[in-house]
Image 1 (cartoon, one colour):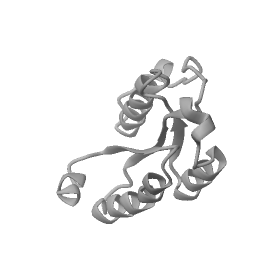
Image 2 (spheres, rainbow, N blue to C red; image 1 turned 180 degrees about the horizontal axis):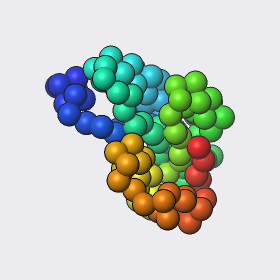
Image 3 (spheres, one colour; image 1 turned 45 degrees about the vertical axis):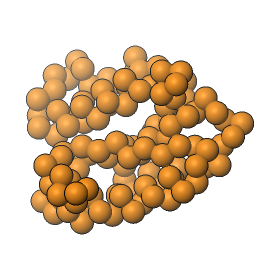
Image 4 (cartoon, rainbow, N blue to C red; image 1 turned 90 degrees about the vertical axis):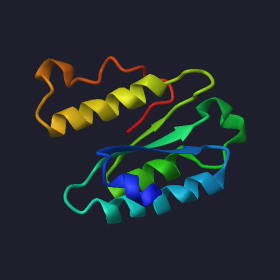
Length: 122
């Protein structure tokens, strides 16, 4: 079922938990399935590390995830759904990227400088 709806989507948030290495390793599997099924245009993808509030239980270092995102040519950010850190911002960044691709975003809205920076990186 995952493969069938990939064709309809234009943007993806690939989420893993920083305290769960298996969920991180699944990111590359999902990324490859998306790329395999999206042959016309590279989709907008953001790798999202959830639970940045649990830094003391971290099993995936930020640098490792940043390196993966850089190697895949996608964006990366850390969020905390529990603490409500950057959750909205992740969706907004993805939406802005999709609108930019379609040429439907005013230049005044392209600046990300107002995005809260706690647990946030590209």
